[in-house]
Image (cartoon, rainbow, N blue to C red; front, side, top):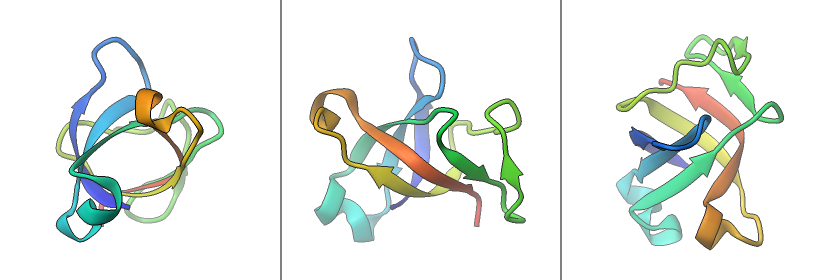
Length: 87
């Protein structure tokens, strides 16, 4: 999945709303709520792996994601298993 972070979740750390790039809208819709945690592998633009403390996902960040479709995804969003920040 490719998209831009629209906003961070107001009441939850490690959660954001993703605006989906046009080529993926048919597959996923225009916006998704995405969560990540210590089990998520996060990489910067140079492909260095980051910890949760090192990540700097902010509104406007361009992300490539591998998402896990959980049973409650429609209600609680998706969980990211991999996140690549930037291009």
